[in-house]
Structure formats: C-alpha cells, structure tokens
Length: 361
Image (tube, rainbow, N blue to C red):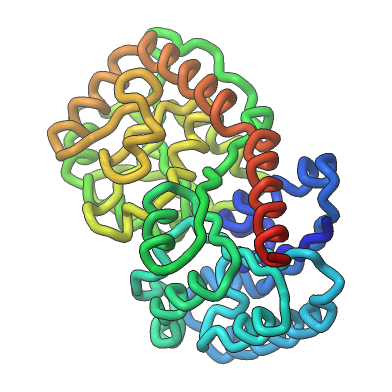
C-alpha cells in the first residue's frame, strides 16, 4: 500500500511529528510504502511561530502552496492520501473536492478542535483566514477521519464523517529513566510547549506565586514559551528545540498542564501530559476532557478541578519524594502499555486499509 502523507508541519512541529513522522518506521515494517510532504518547511515553520514579518510569511506561504500542488500532480500514484490537517491552511477545500471527485482515497487526521475558531497569537491575517466551517466540510468529503481522542471522533461523526480514534503514541525509549528522588533534592516544576499555549499558565498564576512563597528552593523551568513572564515566579526560560527537549524534561520533576474550561480544551489529546509521563515527570493537569481518560489520579499524575486542587497537589508532590518516584514509574509504565508507537502504528495501518477498502466500494 502506497500512502502519501501530507503534513502541516515539518518534523519540528509537534502535531505532525506525533501524528505522522514517529509512525513512519513502523508503518514501513508493516508493509506501508510512505511518502511525506510537509506544507511548511523548517524555515517557514520557524517564521510562523514568531510575531510580525507578515510580508515574509506571505511569500513563504505562497512558495509552500506551489510545493504542495507540485506534489499532488502525482496523486494517482498513491492508494491513500493522508491529510494531517487540511491541504492548505486557508481557503475552501477546493482541491480536496477535486481529488474526491476523481477517485482519490482521502483520510483527514486531526488532534485539535479545528472547527472552533481561535485567534492567532502571531498574525491577525492568519486569524482572518481561519475558517472552522471548512473543517466541517472536510469531515464529509473524506473517506475516513482519524481523530486524536474520542471527543474529536464523536464531533466528526456528528458532522457526517466516518471516524475512528487513534490516540497519540509516545516513545519512552527517547528518555532515560530517572533515578529515585532523594530526600532534600531540589525540586523542579516545569512546563513544555509553545508560545501559543504558554498563556494558560496564567490560569494558575496565583497558585504558582504561593508555591514559590511556600517553597522558595523550588525551581521553575519553562521550555518553548517565548518571552513569557510571570511576576512573583522566577521562571527560567529556554527556547524549544528538538535536540533540547529531552535534556529539558530530564530536569523536570513535576510537569504542568493547565487548560481553560471550554470546548476547545476538550479537543486536546493529552500530548503534553503524555510526554511528561514518558519522561518520568509527574503530570499535574486540569481535570478536563481527555486528561480524565489519560491520567489515573494520584497514581500516574494529578488532576485538578480548581485552584485549591492545584496548590494541594503541587505541595504534596514537592514534599513527598517517594510519592513522586512511585507516580513517575507508574506513568512511564502506563505509556509503555497503552501508547507505544508500534501499537499505534498497527491501529493506523488498519485505518489506512479500511479507508482504501471503503474508497474502492
């Protein structure tokens, strides 16, 4: 089976890395001939996560459109065309319609609530071109929707899609297991992400200030949040890089994942928390959406429904090194048993086969 994977981002982009790139070796072993073309190259991706430079972004995006269209000239060479997000980040799904009418077998993969419009942190022009209704039409155009969690699957099905869930894999072999936390060891609270989501730390700002006051020796480290600042909390900032991600996680003891209580958060597929778990970092997360399925409270992480929960959970973990060690080990084992890349690649292959068979029917 020959599959053309059309990703939104290069390997540096988390959603494409986790939803496509990490599966390629395993799919190859399973007999799937994989070709990947990313809409953004590394240069455009780096440009896209920085504010301003609108003219440069427009030019680079135009070049990306031509690259994608050139790739699609050979669409008949493939049994399945796998869209990781839309073919183009703007405009109606004209090319998707054209491909479907001509018999292409299409899969649409998404792991975020793309049908809910959210403003871009970097570019008002990008916000203007975002069209949630396009995602709803794509649901009905493609042969199969592959969703990152059951809520996203159900939303696609409610809007006319044939949809399945393939949860995000996490490869624990990337991370060296942590040694047991010793009594008196300095504790590090960390956050890993991008400048577009670091704002959610503000949801627990008052808690983090009190934690710093109660435990002044605790370190606060942040990777990928840009120039984020929080008065009263001494965050140590580091730019995100693929090579630096693993060493950064090795320094964390506790990982934060606050989310707002809104429908958009229901679409999150737990990537941040699962990464913490795989790295032996105890996740402390908002008790919402997929987090409730991912984390077994007080065994593989902590779930927090309000600010009191956040302060209590962080305080307990800071004071109890043995509990942190026990929970970190349980979290890694949970990821190994439920989310291995090989296991998820097998599920993805079944989805590819089902779509191909459905497209021929």
